[in-house]
Amino acid sequence: MSSLNEPRRKTRIVEGLGFSLLRLVTLVTVLPILGLVAYIIFMGAPSFSWQFLTAAPSNGMREGGILPAIIGTLYLTLGTALFSVPLGVAAGIYIAEYAQDNRLTRLIRIAIINLAGIPSVVYGLFGLGLFVLFLKFGTSILAASLTLSIMTLPVIISTTEEALRSVPNSFRVVSTSLGATRWQTIWKVILPQGLPGIITGIILGLERAAGETAPILFTGATFFLPELPTSVMDSTMALPYHIFVISTQIPGMPIKIQYGTVLVLLIFVLGMNLVATIIRSRARAKRQW
Amino acid sequence: MKKFSVRDLSIRYSDDNESLRKINIEIEANAITVLFGPAGGGKSTFLRVLNRLNDLADVKTMTGEVLFNGVNILDPKLDVIDLRRKIGMVFSRPVPLPLSIYENVAYGLIMAGERNKKKLDSAVEAALRQAVLWDEVYDRLSDSGFAISGGQQQRLCLARVLALEPEVIMLDEPTSALDPVSTAKIESLLTELKEKYTIILAPHNVQQAARMADYAAFFLMGELVEFANGKDMFLMPKDKRSQDYITGRFG
Image 1 (cartoon, one colour):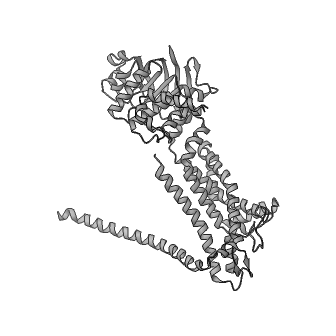
Image 2: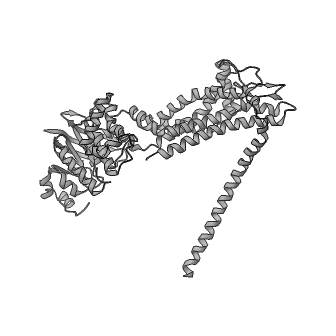
Image 3: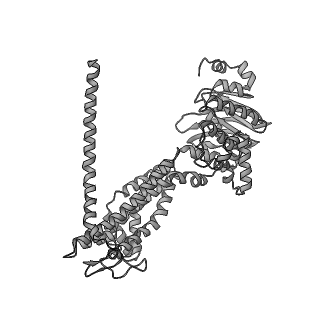
């Protein structure tokens, strides 16, 4: 008996230790993030008021609200979506469903993966060179949105490709055998099944764009604007850049406004994240294959 | 009447996997032609040549001629979409599309451009009745195609093919994932359907082959070893290899 039980007890102890260690590591990584968010809420919440969300900054940013920065970030995110979603989804569909598996396709795929790893400031400089100077868009919402789009594209392309590839091939074979063309198969069967994954990828990509400072630094963000932008050729205030400005550039800045602004950006980004999570879990619950 | 005349059909995949060598066969209309033999013998490949579904696979070389109603369907200029509507296929695993029962049956017609709701409705009902599924699903046509049992799903897949009113129905081991009751239902259905359609069946065992065959073709390692009418094949096979396989000496 004991000779049978002995090794098993040992395994059980090792297993217990292993799980405890994993639990500890998880806690160590999660706790600081939770702490950070809690701290930002604690410090930023007091500055929240109707006025804070709906008024322009005044007295050299030290008073008033942050409306222009909120609106600016909304515009930039929308602008980015406008360019990067159709292009990115189309490219993802092409690579997943149409492109033949040859050297060129592999090269493109590697390029896309690598593009996702380029530091955002490099995108900023690229946008400055191409959109602001060469195409003469100036520092504008248009130039900044295009720059953010280029940064977001790789994310959207690869998540779209991934989402479509996860749809079982048997659906393609069956649809084809019933006399559907390739496009009909994609449109009626493959895309609807891949859509939740694609939308998740789009949101995650846009969320990153909304929070970036470097790409808009040279291409469209501005220090202070007394009025809201009226055209895409105007430059704009934006939350990430505004946070940089009020944290480093203005002496005597009330700390609660800084935290309040960070909290707004955080809510914006985490809100998008939440939507992505809900879409994904709903789709997973509905999926039948 | 001959539905298909296949002459010297050879095929090789890029990975040299399953291939066909010099297949010559004539497939009779309004009869069940059974293709049988051990796995990897080329039955599935052969079926997928007939509706050009092999276009999706990585084929290295394909030579020979496949005449369907006298027209060579290997012609690169052929309208494959039209061909696939005339030659329906049921697969070994029931694969409903991720759509409702109704949409599954109407799928082929809608893809062919049929928009008339009344026509679609009556075609769906007719196809489901033909597949003996109507009584089981008529009150839940908008449910998902996955919400019914495996046997029902396979009849749904058959109904989906029937809705297109094809000339030929090909079935690749259609009952391999089904219980005996569902299998019996499909088999009796096929016997009725042959009055109207040309049926090519790759059964998943010799017993089913013997039960169903009007004509039988024995495929072994990419070769058509023997082709005869069903009785001759299963009572007195001429080739030693078909004889060994039928009597269970290998396979």
